[in-house]
Image (cartoon, rainbow, N blue to C red):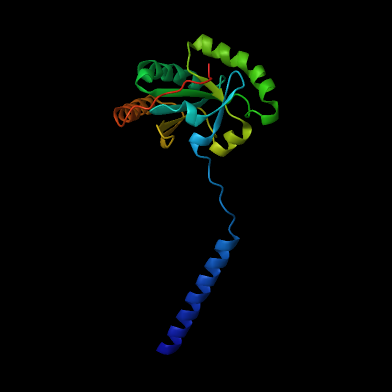
Length: 196
């Protein structure tokens, strides 16, 4: 009986290995999200820029919309942080998602249509942050499924922390994380290209 048990166990183990290998071959390859430093943002003049060219020593990406009430509360706070720390290497990019993303074949027309509403919002809220947009494909790949959504990146474009929604506690933590990033490592030159 012991020998029979060993044979059965060996056969079961073999079947599990074969089944596992077959399932692994049939499983669809999961698409990797884009590296954030590789994505392209579009300024309000319809000029694209690789995110890597606008990274600071610490970079805050804030996804927002003009109609979003929590965004209206968060934007002035982000402006304060930017005003205080931009000279130390902080970049803050306000990525507007008012539309469902920009269609690549209608880039100039859609930006021209959206620009007045975005600029009016920024003017009335006292916002001078660089404002960008993203195309539909990039917005979907990034998985921006709620706003505001704030993403903190280090100088290499690696995600440090994600803050869905707005809260005072989240803003305090964001400030602490930014201070940590700005206090470490050599200062990276910040290129301010595009934006508002």
